[in-house]
Image (cartoon, rainbow, N blue to C red):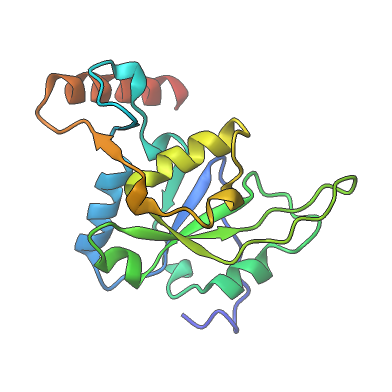
Length: 186
């Protein structure tokens, strides 16, 4: 899609968007959605459902043709340096590299706007976040423990993530809890 001919509007959603920009790999997109819905925990493996989270609690996949071939520069142009009123200060692109890779590394783009009374902090260049690591990024960002931009130098291979595997009692408990929360919220 030629985004120079049509201005792009970033989605007005309540969670951080994951914009699908590559439509040549439907299987890769399906794998990404499964990864974002996979319950994960960090640190020691646990059988306690309270220790797990999933990225879809913090992000919303956006599968719309208008974002086909969207580039980071176009995203940044659509989110001006000052005054934008988005509910998020970063987003992810699911591009061809994301969907072709085993680890599904989303391209994270820093959109933050400095407060007028704060010392300016330059935006970070776009960086990759493996799909199974998105939950930890978003958890930390949501509680202001670490901001999204502070993950730009993370070596993801050093960060262990454990998943609740389908077919296990823990997975079933987490899935039921997630479904119930979704029904309450929507």
